[in-house]
Image 1 (tube, each protein chain N blue to C red):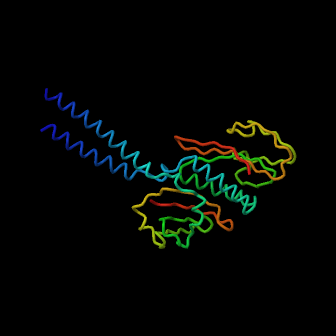
Image 2: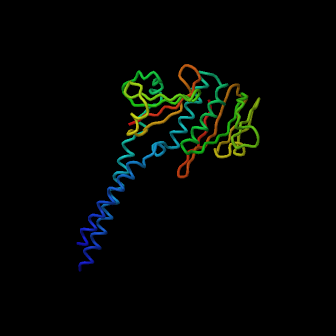
Image 3: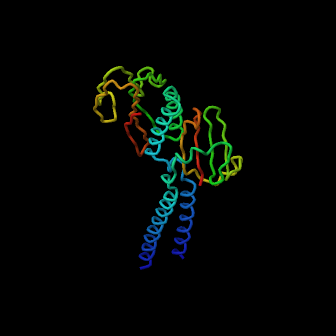
Length: 146
Length: 106
């Protein structure tokens, strides 16, 4: 008799668990930080090549809102010879852009989470990003230039 | 003796449940192979619903318009209630700057 109860309980638990797994696969689980990072890199490159650098600041704003919506934190540091006038860089924010003319020594003090040290010699039209995508259990950091 | 049988059965059911849980969890997530989508090929999906291979949603961020295309037909959100998102991407625009989010459903 008791074993029959256990059998019934087992069946009940199986049904409950299968419902939980069926409904609990949220879109966030199917996205990972790498994909979000690639999304950012590809689209920044696409914008720069097709629409011009003026649109980059606008896109970063949309991108930040988007990552927030899917429960990710997104932050970046940019180095550029153009003034991208990124709103998030106003004030004492971590999302900051460094604009420069002439040669520029890039070290870890500037790129807080990307471990890169290099010198840019009079680059006429460079835009570099060091970005960080993370949520509670995974993260992705990368550095790229267009 | 009887209590031993119950104990063994309990242990067995727990093991069975664990395997079942892991199986459903991993088989479900591996079906959604996000890497099988190439964002460069999907840039041609637009809000005119002229592609009949996918179920997708386009959220235009400039005017917040939402378009849902169900295999080439424009539908309302009730059609996708039983479908799960399997790919998401924030595009900057096709021919001009017009950011939109593409969500593909499986």
